[in-house]
Image (cartoon, rainbow, N blue to C red; front, side, top):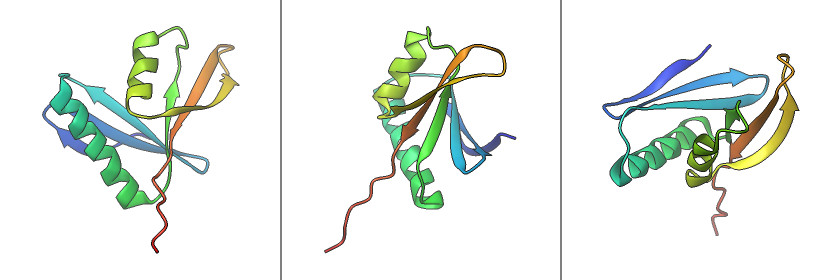
Length: 102
């Protein structure tokens, strides 16, 4: 079940837990550089709150616009799976920044 967690005038961020993974879904209503920076900040807030990697489902592997969106937000391809629908789906992951404190 998708749960809305960040409501912004230009986008809405949902999260969904599946097995041991936290999936993020973003509905974007308006796009520009300022919105991109705000989404980056929102993803950082999720990292701060949940302390774990965020995953995204890329259902249509032919959708280059969505793939480029994931890449721009620094998601990396994690796995390629065969869905129950018989189609290939990709799971992408954005890893939490783990900096050592010295």
